[in-house]
View 1 (cartoon, rainbow, N blue to C red):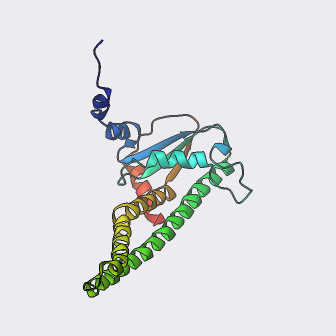
View 2 (view 1 turned 120 degrees about the horizontal axis):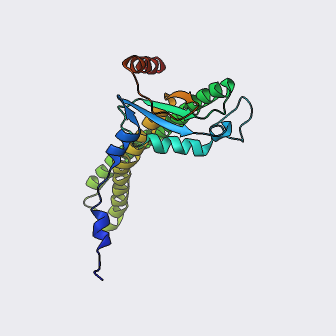
View 3 (view 1 turned 180 degrees about the vertical axis):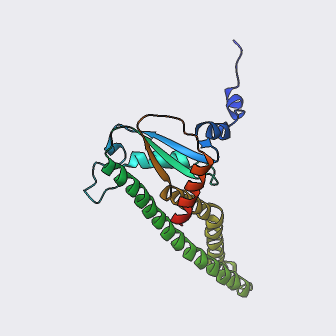
Length: 211
């Protein structure tokens, strides 16, 4: 039996992300996320108290995983499919989706501010340690090693923010903002939605009002 090089085979596989997104989500420039539910608590956590509702964590994860790969230029619409909701429950779901992701957006913004202040501190530390290294160039190696360690620590932390932490926080903030402004619609049964120009213009107008 001929031995197959499966490692090379798997490495050569091509991604179909773009075609899958266009096929499953995009219609006329709008991205629709479809979510089939069987009860109110598929969306709203069973641990929530009345008037203090929060989203089911599985539902949050579903939205984040579904919306994450979709390019930012497409407005998001969430189509919740199921005939198990009262009008009051629909209103609650719309409100809690907006409020919960707005809350998440605020948390990410706080983290961004904290990391940015830390980044400024790292820049100052890098400059100070660099000056100290230059001023102590005539000293023995042992005292200077302390300043070398600080210099590389500040530099490493600064570049980590620029290329890793800062990027991830901006990505997380953008996703929370998109989900906080998502348009929620309800359907009794699954149907692929086609958006007319009037519906698209209305959606963009609603998004502008949320800014």
